Length: 300
Image (cartoon, rainbow, N blue to C red; front, side):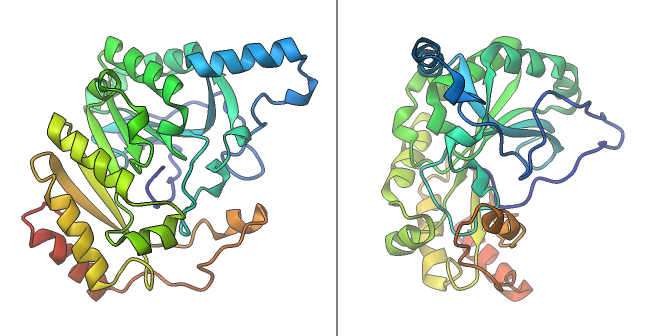
């Protein structure tokens, strides 16, 4: 799942690199694509079985889109790959076109690895690397595991942007291949978490506890949504959760809500519950950041 800030346009990164067009198609709704197999209905039963075998083995994955960005999804210049498929239904999601795995573009592991290999010099020069986001990366665990392993074999820094809800799917070997987790803690009060995401909070806490026990580095992301996640009590609960991982949390990013995804919700015929909602005011953002800082956390 990606952070709620919209992926910026990067026609050129001043002084670093101008990415060239690649073979990810540009759809009607940015990032949506041709489905689980493009024209999957044209596949024979044998071809369909082979395709799903590749998905299970992690040699084929459903990709929403990718961006080459600086200082957004981890350190340095990042190739951020947005996976399709997510079990959460966050009310503020700016990429609802990643909800369904079938709406992505099927791409082979070898093609993705070749693309990453082309950017290695940029990654080395900027101390950047690859960030796997979504959607929810752990929705396609076999494919993501293979991409991470290939990155480590190439010496490329890796980052996974996740809600942690599917953290139990990642074995220790997979976690060993992740240099940094961007862990989205969407609420600290279970009832609010359920209202915001339609899912339970506990798997995120369990995953964070596991990462902290292992010593995996974490950047926390918390989306500040007026009337939904911004109450003093909810922020205190989030800060309490994050503070228990203080040994591995390098920073907390408080991300003010924006409604840049509204058009996508409407184009997809989905019910957008935040119509007319405005971003939090400066005083509220300051208050929330201070709540995290009071735990001794580094906050942005």
